Image (tube, rainbow, N blue to C red; front, side, top):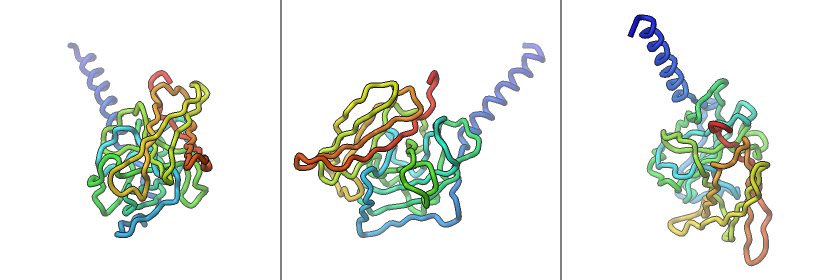
Length: 237
Protein backbone atom coordinates (compact mmCIF):
# COMPACT_ATOMS: atom_id res chain seq x y z
CA UNK A 1 0.00 0.00 0.00
CA UNK A 2 1.49 3.37 -1.03
CA UNK A 3 1.56 6.58 1.04
CA UNK A 4 -1.61 8.06 -0.49
CA UNK A 5 -3.59 4.88 0.16
CA UNK A 6 -2.49 4.89 3.80
CA UNK A 7 -3.54 8.53 4.20
CA UNK A 8 -6.95 7.81 2.64
CA UNK A 9 -7.46 4.79 4.88
CA UNK A 10 -6.58 6.78 8.00
CA UNK A 11 -8.94 9.58 6.91
CA UNK A 12 -11.78 7.12 6.26
CA UNK A 13 -11.50 5.42 9.63
CA UNK A 14 -11.12 8.78 11.35
CA UNK A 15 -14.41 9.98 9.87
CA UNK A 16 -16.08 6.63 10.58
CA UNK A 17 -15.14 6.55 14.23
CA UNK A 18 -15.94 10.24 14.60
CA UNK A 19 -19.47 9.64 13.29
CA UNK A 20 -19.88 6.56 15.47
CA UNK A 21 -18.73 8.49 18.50
CA UNK A 22 -21.07 11.35 17.64
CA UNK A 23 -23.99 8.91 17.31
CA UNK A 24 -23.20 7.31 20.64
CA UNK A 25 -22.84 10.69 22.35
CA UNK A 26 -26.23 12.06 21.18
CA UNK A 27 -27.72 13.38 24.40
CA UNK A 28 -30.98 15.10 25.34
CA UNK A 29 -30.05 17.28 28.31
CA UNK A 30 -32.32 17.90 31.27
CA UNK A 31 -34.07 21.28 30.99
CA UNK A 32 -33.52 23.06 34.29
CA UNK A 33 -31.73 21.84 37.40
CA UNK A 34 -34.61 20.29 39.32
CA UNK A 35 -35.15 16.63 38.41
CA UNK A 36 -38.74 15.69 39.22
CA UNK A 37 -39.27 12.16 40.56
CA UNK A 38 -40.63 10.31 43.55
CA UNK A 39 -40.56 6.82 45.02
CA UNK A 40 -43.28 6.23 47.59
CA UNK A 41 -44.79 3.44 49.64
CA UNK A 42 -48.28 4.36 48.46
CA UNK A 43 -49.11 3.45 44.87
CA UNK A 44 -49.89 6.39 42.59
CA UNK A 45 -52.42 6.12 39.77
CA UNK A 46 -51.30 8.17 36.76
CA UNK A 47 -54.79 8.72 35.41
CA UNK A 48 -53.52 8.27 31.84
CA UNK A 49 -54.75 5.46 29.61
CA UNK A 50 -51.38 5.16 27.85
CA UNK A 51 -48.54 4.89 30.35
CA UNK A 52 -45.64 4.29 27.96
CA UNK A 53 -44.42 3.40 24.46
CA UNK A 54 -41.25 1.30 24.33
CA UNK A 55 -39.32 -0.76 21.84
CA UNK A 56 -40.34 -4.41 22.17
CA UNK A 57 -37.82 -6.62 23.92
CA UNK A 58 -36.29 -3.75 25.87
CA UNK A 59 -33.95 -4.72 28.69
CA UNK A 60 -33.89 -3.99 32.40
CA UNK A 61 -31.43 -1.08 32.64
CA UNK A 62 -30.98 2.37 34.14
CA UNK A 63 -30.18 4.15 30.85
CA UNK A 64 -33.16 5.57 28.93
CA UNK A 65 -33.26 6.72 25.30
CA UNK A 66 -35.73 7.92 22.67
CA UNK A 67 -35.59 6.87 19.02
CA UNK A 68 -35.26 9.85 16.70
CA UNK A 69 -37.53 10.45 13.73
CA UNK A 70 -37.20 12.68 10.65
CA UNK A 71 -40.85 13.69 11.10
CA UNK A 72 -40.56 15.02 14.64
CA UNK A 73 -41.06 18.70 15.38
CA UNK A 74 -40.07 20.97 18.23
CA UNK A 75 -36.97 21.27 20.38
CA UNK A 76 -38.18 19.79 23.68
CA UNK A 77 -39.45 16.39 24.72
CA UNK A 78 -41.46 15.64 27.84
CA UNK A 79 -40.67 12.28 29.43
CA UNK A 80 -42.89 10.53 31.95
CA UNK A 81 -41.77 7.35 33.68
CA UNK A 82 -43.97 5.19 35.89
CA UNK A 83 -43.47 1.74 37.37
CA UNK A 84 -46.05 -1.00 36.95
CA UNK A 85 -46.68 -1.06 40.70
CA UNK A 86 -47.26 2.71 40.72
CA UNK A 87 -44.59 3.38 43.36
CA UNK A 88 -42.09 5.20 41.10
CA UNK A 89 -42.97 8.27 39.02
CA UNK A 90 -41.09 11.02 37.23
CA UNK A 91 -41.86 13.82 34.78
CA UNK A 92 -39.15 15.98 33.19
CA UNK A 93 -38.50 18.04 30.08
CA UNK A 94 -35.35 17.44 28.01
CA UNK A 95 -33.74 19.53 25.25
CA UNK A 96 -33.43 17.57 22.02
CA UNK A 97 -29.94 17.91 20.46
CA UNK A 98 -29.87 20.47 17.64
CA UNK A 99 -28.07 18.18 15.17
CA UNK A 100 -28.11 14.42 15.56
CA UNK A 101 -28.06 11.59 13.02
CA UNK A 102 -28.08 8.93 15.73
CA UNK A 103 -30.83 6.30 15.68
CA UNK A 104 -31.48 6.95 19.37
CA UNK A 105 -30.83 9.89 21.68
CA UNK A 106 -29.86 9.15 25.27
CA UNK A 107 -31.65 11.03 28.04
CA UNK A 108 -29.69 12.81 30.75
CA UNK A 109 -31.76 10.96 33.33
CA UNK A 110 -30.52 12.05 36.75
CA UNK A 111 -32.47 9.62 38.90
CA UNK A 112 -31.14 8.92 42.36
CA UNK A 113 -32.68 5.45 42.20
CA UNK A 114 -31.43 2.33 40.42
CA UNK A 115 -33.94 1.79 37.62
CA UNK A 116 -32.20 -1.40 36.48
CA UNK A 117 -33.92 -3.20 39.35
CA UNK A 118 -37.18 -2.95 37.40
CA UNK A 119 -37.73 -5.87 35.02
CA UNK A 120 -38.32 -5.37 31.30
CA UNK A 121 -42.06 -4.76 31.52
CA UNK A 122 -42.09 -3.22 35.01
CA UNK A 123 -41.15 0.32 33.94
CA UNK A 124 -42.91 2.35 31.26
CA UNK A 125 -41.56 5.44 29.49
CA UNK A 126 -43.73 7.97 27.67
CA UNK A 127 -41.80 10.58 25.68
CA UNK A 128 -43.75 13.09 23.63
CA UNK A 129 -42.85 16.25 21.77
CA UNK A 130 -43.12 19.48 23.72
CA UNK A 131 -42.44 20.87 27.16
CA UNK A 132 -44.16 19.14 30.10
CA UNK A 133 -45.84 22.45 30.99
CA UNK A 134 -47.55 22.57 27.58
CA UNK A 135 -50.51 20.60 26.26
CA UNK A 136 -49.89 16.93 26.91
CA UNK A 137 -51.07 15.44 23.66
CA UNK A 138 -48.11 15.71 21.29
CA UNK A 139 -46.74 12.95 19.03
CA UNK A 140 -44.97 10.18 20.93
CA UNK A 141 -41.39 8.96 20.43
CA UNK A 142 -40.49 5.30 20.97
CA UNK A 143 -38.43 4.81 24.12
CA UNK A 144 -35.77 2.22 24.93
CA UNK A 145 -33.93 1.04 28.02
CA UNK A 146 -30.26 0.08 28.01
CA UNK A 147 -27.55 0.70 25.41
CA UNK A 148 -28.80 -1.59 22.63
CA UNK A 149 -30.34 0.83 20.13
CA UNK A 150 -31.26 -1.61 17.38
CA UNK A 151 -34.18 -0.27 15.37
CA UNK A 152 -37.32 -2.01 16.68
CA UNK A 153 -39.58 -4.19 14.54
CA UNK A 154 -42.42 -3.71 17.01
CA UNK A 155 -43.29 -1.52 19.96
CA UNK A 156 -45.05 -2.17 23.25
CA UNK A 157 -47.73 0.24 24.40
CA UNK A 158 -48.33 0.05 28.15
CA UNK A 159 -51.99 0.71 28.97
CA UNK A 160 -54.09 1.24 32.08
CA UNK A 161 -57.11 -0.73 30.89
CA UNK A 162 -59.52 0.07 33.72
CA UNK A 163 -60.27 -3.67 33.94
CA UNK A 164 -61.49 -3.77 30.36
CA UNK A 165 -60.79 -5.79 27.23
CA UNK A 166 -58.27 -3.72 25.28
CA UNK A 167 -57.51 -3.50 21.55
CA UNK A 168 -55.16 -1.41 19.42
CA UNK A 169 -56.35 -0.11 16.03
CA UNK A 170 -53.44 0.84 13.76
CA UNK A 171 -53.88 3.21 10.82
CA UNK A 172 -51.31 4.54 8.37
CA UNK A 173 -51.42 5.87 4.78
CA UNK A 174 -49.33 2.96 3.47
CA UNK A 175 -50.93 -0.01 5.30
CA UNK A 176 -54.46 -1.28 5.82
CA UNK A 177 -56.07 -0.60 9.18
CA UNK A 178 -55.49 -3.45 11.62
CA UNK A 179 -57.01 -4.32 14.98
CA UNK A 180 -54.81 -6.16 17.49
CA UNK A 181 -55.83 -7.69 20.79
CA UNK A 182 -53.74 -6.58 23.78
CA UNK A 183 -52.59 -8.86 26.57
CA UNK A 184 -53.26 -8.45 30.28
CA UNK A 185 -50.38 -8.51 32.77
CA UNK A 186 -51.50 -11.04 35.35
CA UNK A 187 -48.71 -11.05 37.92
CA UNK A 188 -47.76 -8.54 40.60
CA UNK A 189 -49.22 -5.16 41.47
CA UNK A 190 -50.64 -3.35 38.43
CA UNK A 191 -51.54 0.12 39.65
CA UNK A 192 -49.51 2.05 37.06
CA UNK A 193 -50.64 -0.07 34.11
CA UNK A 194 -51.94 -3.59 33.55
CA UNK A 195 -51.95 -4.25 29.80
CA UNK A 196 -49.45 -4.41 26.93
CA UNK A 197 -50.37 -3.81 23.28
CA UNK A 198 -47.62 -5.06 20.91
CA UNK A 199 -47.71 -3.21 17.58
CA UNK A 200 -45.56 -4.26 14.58
CA UNK A 201 -43.87 -1.34 12.80
CA UNK A 202 -41.22 -2.95 10.56
CA UNK A 203 -43.41 -2.64 7.42
CA UNK A 204 -44.63 0.89 8.10
CA UNK A 205 -43.03 3.18 5.55
CA UNK A 206 -44.26 6.57 6.75
CA UNK A 207 -42.68 8.70 9.44
CA UNK A 208 -45.64 8.33 11.79
CA UNK A 209 -48.22 5.78 12.84
CA UNK A 210 -51.64 6.45 14.35
CA UNK A 211 -52.69 4.08 17.12
CA UNK A 212 -56.13 4.13 18.73
CA UNK A 213 -56.54 2.30 22.03
CA UNK A 214 -60.04 0.84 22.34
CA UNK A 215 -61.39 -0.50 25.64
CA UNK A 216 -64.56 -2.50 26.20
CA UNK A 217 -65.98 -3.28 29.63
CA UNK A 218 -69.20 -5.20 30.29
CA UNK A 219 -70.01 -5.01 26.54
CA UNK A 220 -69.80 -1.22 26.69
CA UNK A 221 -67.17 0.75 24.80
CA UNK A 222 -65.15 3.28 26.79
CA UNK A 223 -63.87 6.52 25.19
CA UNK A 224 -60.99 5.75 22.78
CA UNK A 225 -57.48 7.13 23.24
CA UNK A 226 -55.55 8.07 20.10
CA UNK A 227 -51.84 8.75 19.80
CA UNK A 228 -49.43 9.49 16.96
CA UNK A 229 -46.17 7.54 17.20
CA UNK A 230 -43.07 8.87 15.46
CA UNK A 231 -41.25 6.06 13.65
CA UNK A 232 -37.44 5.87 13.47
CA UNK A 233 -35.76 6.26 10.09
CA UNK A 234 -34.97 2.97 8.35
CA UNK A 235 -32.76 2.37 5.34
CA UNK A 236 -34.85 2.77 2.19
CA UNK A 237 -37.74 4.48 4.00
